[in-house]
Image (cartoon, rainbow, N blue to C red):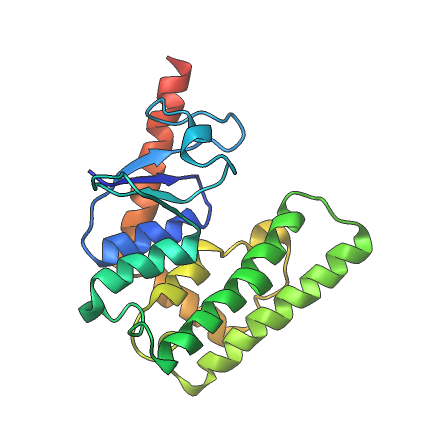
Amino acid sequence: MTKLYIANQTCSQTVQIIANELGLTPELIHFDVFGKSTSNGDDFNEVNPLGYVPVLVLDNDQNDQLSETVIISSYLADQFPESQLAPPAGTLERAKFDQLLNFLATEIAQKHIPLMRKLMTEDGIKWSHAKLASAYGVLDARLADGRAYLTGDTFTVADAYVFGTWWHERSGAPITHLKNLMAYKARIDARASVQKALKDEAEIVALHEERKSA
């Protein structure tokens, strides 16, 4: 069975959501980022020496491993083009879509991390908060025409990635005034794939904690 290594409340939720949208059921394995253990006893250093999730281990002859959120999510979407979770590879629409994913990765996901880990000076915090507010403002403006999701009325990998990096409360980024964005987030929250991802994550985290205390 394909394995998906995740961590609690991280961007690995993105891949869980996409797998759920596609009806896939990879074996979920929780990695404790701080304790460095896994829910099934695997040595995560052997899975990803860089020490971060998500990692997808394919059920093929080579047991190929994929890492990086947008790579795994886009790969899964491409296996099921009828899902419309990503535009067809090689098209201009896909290039624009990949541009959006890179924007989300660099201007949102990565900007949250040093704030959440409290690694910044006061000036750095102000700068990063402003950068995040500006980046989320771009999304808010994109949604201003009434579209349901970032690229139109179809849920895509990009929307799952926004959910998987929805860390403004932990980083302190001031974005709650962005009304289009907040309404959009509520639509994502209501999706069955998202609710299942949160439930499955909570269950595997609880199981891991139980095993550690046994």
